[in-house]
Image (cartoon, rainbow, N blue to C red; front, side, top):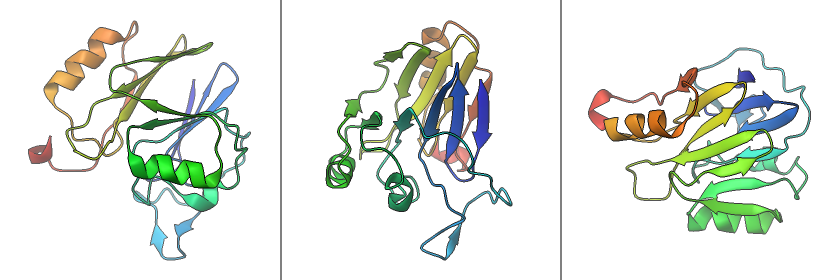
Amino acid sequence: MIVKLLGHACVYLQIDGHHILMDPWLGETLLGRFRRFPDPGPLNFDFPPPDLLLISHHHWDHVHIPTLLKFDRSTPVLIPENEQLERIFKILGFSRVKKVRPWEPEEFSWGKVWPTRSKVPFGEVGYLVESSQGTLWNLVDTVFSEKEVYQAMEVTAKPIRLCLAPFQSFDEM
């Protein structure tokens, strides 16, 4: 498994020759003003088109429209139940959008994707990606509890080798 943090919540994964993008934002700035946080410095976006897009929630810094417009509209997309996300992907013309629910896995030839729960009320998930090459948990902006950590350890066959956690206070979790 190859993992590249492309700044903010954008993560690129390569698993058994499959290319996955989480919360894709392939640009130096947003609207010419907002830099990525944390700022990863110069970025290299030279990788094959994604075979799968994972979207955590509808906020502008996780659904970068100029990036999405670069992709084939038949690319499979996983989204949480969120009316705004459904509208965005319908307007953009994506034909293979699937709504996911926390802790209901999506199975692929290379492994599983487990959407993980967030305590926010507007339809947001993290993603636990499990393959024979390892397990990654991207919590994105989710507000999670200790229960979610134990559930993640229960559902995965392998230890979680990398966990990307949100930058927020412990009081929120």
